[in-house]
Figure 1 (cartoon, rainbow, N blue to C red):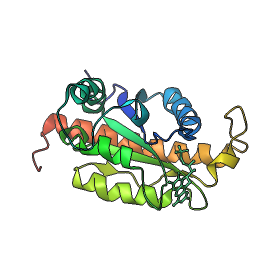
Figure 2: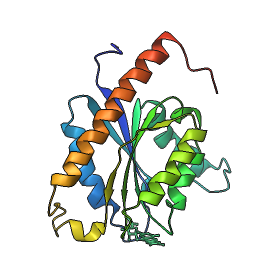
Figure 3: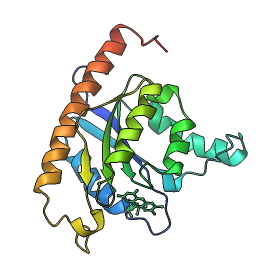
Length: 195
Ligand SMILES: Cc1cc2nc3c(=O)[nH]c(=O)nc-3n(C[C@H](O)[C@H](O)[C@H](O)COP(=O)(O)O)c2cc1C
């Protein structure tokens, strides 16, 4: 592998598992951006497709779920976390998947994309910064947020006015790629041992 030039493996973590969720509409838009980016090779972990108990009991179901999820996290050079806002924070199911892992997040960049009502999920995104700091991950400055997300897309899942979100995604992904490359090269020279 050429750490300087090879595209970055980015895992999109889809944070909503609510019955009847809107999340996949935003996730599809986001995936289009990840797939179109020459520096990124995307992978998806969908919280709705995971079956991890909140007790951290290592049940056969949990082990099977981890066997599916964990390699997609450990193999990533960078993450994009998509979160809705529930009661001014991010969903419990998303926190559960994050908490089941530790080293997988370490010394990697995280881009945040949020959606919700009036505040566009910004409070959920800011809460995630605190969580990822504890995990030795680096959240990038710029985010993408959808205010009144349901009204921003048409019935076919297309954005009514893509200009703002497209520009925000370009900025956020530019920062993610910079950090992803910088950290991958740095870890090749000097393993991250500050944990
Ligand atoms: C339990 C719950 C709490 C919510 N709390 C907020 C909130 O605090 N702020 C906000 O802007 N939207 C809030 N919403 C609206 C959601 O962000 C919005 O419905 C979003 O589409 C939910 O994502 P999902 O459909 O993928 O689950 C809440 C929705 C639910 C279900």
